[in-house]
Length: 170
Image 1 (cartoon, one colour):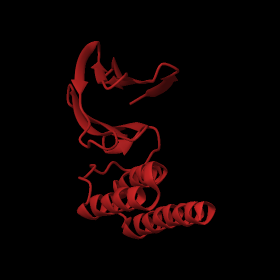
Image 2: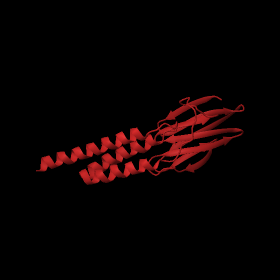
Image 3: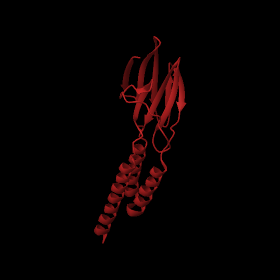
Image 4: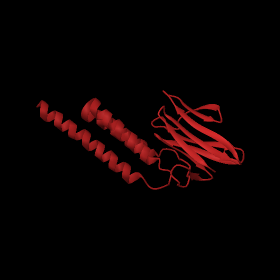
């Protein structure tokens, strides 16, 4: 298999792949709220498997080859014969978001809003996005400690903003 990956400025990821001597083109086109996978000119609209961040693990069959198009957040890679072409790492199917990541997300958002209003909510949103994206590691490593650290750091910043505002007002 031969690969030439081209990243274009218009949010397009493109791979040219040769299967059994025939060239095939696979593209991802991102737009406002829409994601399209184009295989040899055939367009298919796809949706994220997660409502919080972009999560896609799409199987594409070309002749006798199975390709997996994986997108987590803004990172995109194509796996052929069980190996990612961009990174060279082994392909592992992307799982679902763990329940503990959703609990931490709720904590960061709710406490952020109560601690420091809209600014705390925005900080919670950022922390939640980091926590969910880190919890989706495809290599099977335990990401709970990283997400606990993100949650503690986020809540600490939110509490610090609350104390700063209270100190400035009173």
